[in-house]
Length: 154
Length: 154
Image 1 (cartoon, rainbow over the protein chains, first blue to last red):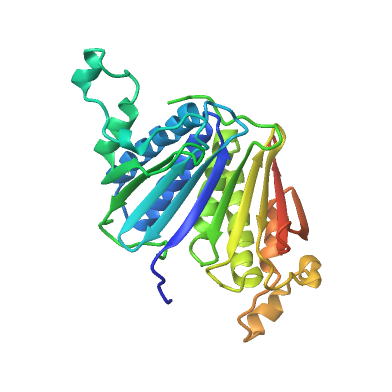
Image 2 (cartoon, rainbow over the protein chains, first blue to last red):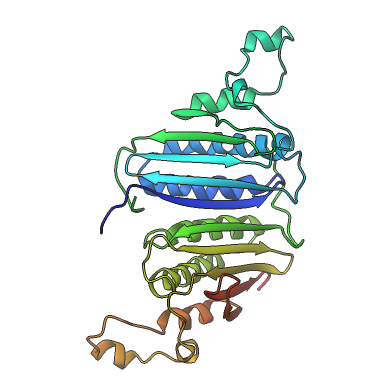
């Protein structure tokens, strides 16, 4: 089969807690099929859940009629996922650097935002893509180099 | 993380999946379907039936409707309700579904003795055997649309 550079899968669901589990299961299985081992898939599942919950709770303010959009781009050696919301509450990309735990404990930063710090520990790359108010928030996460190539063609 | 199951019942509370028309990606639809069905409380054998039916429907859409053109999308829409799970599979209709294929009962002798690679008819027959309701229509995009419904509490 001829291999094009990459393919994209999109998944959309309402901004309601619970749906992120379907996304987590479906995309976790996709990563398994790409050849990522169980531990990395588990990390990805956790990171993706956090990203979706952030988008549901913050970006879309739990307004269930607003959609969460996930785009998964698959190439031979990486899986890139962009979680987008409609940006009811906007998160500037300049806030990519999460506050430190010390800052949080000292009350200098919001106690929330631990999710972003956690995600950073679990995947190879993550951060908000540049965006403007009205264009929604777009959070990108990526994992690289599955140890073996597998069932899903890239 | 939330422990609430995905809400069901309301219009618009749907999960939408867009896949490239390339064999292998039907597995992503199967995994999404089973993730949703398990959380809705379907028994394992029903989940397996659903996986098979979704696989056949998406494979049909890739091979026939979209003629393996990877740029064409297969759109799968999952709608959960109290009664069960409805799954719509739509292609972009490069090739219209043959009306005769919908009702044809496959002939095992013809398949065994035919040199023809096209074992047409089995997929649709199988989907009808496995699902509680099956309907064919024209998708909003103009392509073929297959709707299958699996009921809870059977």
